[in-house]
Amino acid sequence: MDLDAFNELLTPRGIRALAEAEELRSAGPVAAATRLRRSYDAALTSAALTQAELRERAREKFGPDAGVMYFTPHGLEQATRTEVARHRARRLTAREPGAPRVLDVCCGIGGDTIALARAGCVVDAVDVDPLTVAVARANVEALGLGVRVTVRLADAATVSPEGYDVLFADPARRTSRGRTFDPMAYSPPWPVVLDLVSRSARACLKVAPGIPYEFIPPDAEAEWVSFKGEVKEASLWTGGPWPDAEGTEPEERPEPGPADGGAGGGAEGPTGGPRVRRATLLPGGQSLTATGARALTGPVGRYLYEPDGAAIRAHLVGEVAELVAGRLPDPMIAYITGDVPIDTPWAARYEVQDVLAFSLKRLRSILRERQIGNVTIKKRASALDIERLRADLRLSGDKSAVIILTRIMDKPSVLICHPSPPA
Image (cartoon, rainbow, N blue to C red; front, side, top):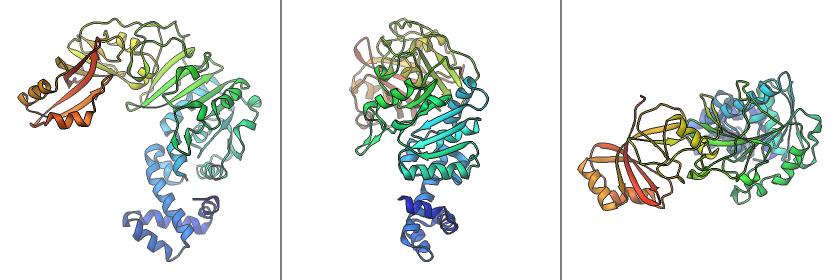
């Protein structure tokens, strides 16, 4: 879809075509296209069908708003889920009450722009792509937020953040070859983003959750956000302190120690990084920050806790272990074990039935004896392919179990578990 085709969608004729395309979705793409071509040209038919499909896909992120919004494929993929954008906007306005002026660079289709405006901010949103700007502008108008938002075409590298209360930046994380995890390949690149931050009174940067710690400014707060157990993104907050969404300001990060939590599955603490590390769970809104808690290492007990990914990314495994009175079976791996069932939103809990040195033959034999034919397989620090293992187990039976592949004190191990109900 090009800019001309999108602009045609905004005309009365285009609005009719889109409404018809949405009604025809259930008929299938070929039948829908055939019907629409009786009244509209090929370009408008294609644009309307594409937009109808994108709106349907967008409902997961945007809920009812998706029914009146406009999207591009890449814009929808990078757009922030409504619940996450709303959380971030609440944090921003808790620090900047009233009607703070926000410069939103790389605004994309306007997901964060919309949340900021609804939270009371006055937003100047810019993007370098003309089609994306047109889509964002149409979304702002469709949701009745035009009085608070200006959307314009501009290169982020050329804007001046000095005249705003807060800079918000969401650099694109896609290249011609697909998604990139290297901040130097962001658009704009990381040095340009940091230059904007250096000239801002306060800033919030949306980044990928796997951003290497060495790219995080040392005076920033880094917040990892999980939605229904899945880590969605990270935000870097500068010019703080920044209160949480309820207005509580965080404490300064203590010096980390071993077993302070580790990104990517480890439990070794960071050696540097941001001033404050925070994990947030949505939709509940629970927040956890670093306290310097240091988990001990010990044998596997009756229960195994799997920390939420946001806590792992934020190096808060030690803090989660403290919440459940637990210890680490291995100091480098982010599984926690304990002897009593303690409920926490920060970890899933399993009751341990067996702890074995890994042996395919022995594991298969035990599962057969117990008539376990359905398994959920989890792994951390294991090179085994889950689907290959599932096939090799040749499962049969009507019972279920959770199989956890890991290393315990550098030895390949497997735990046979069952989900533990709330205490």
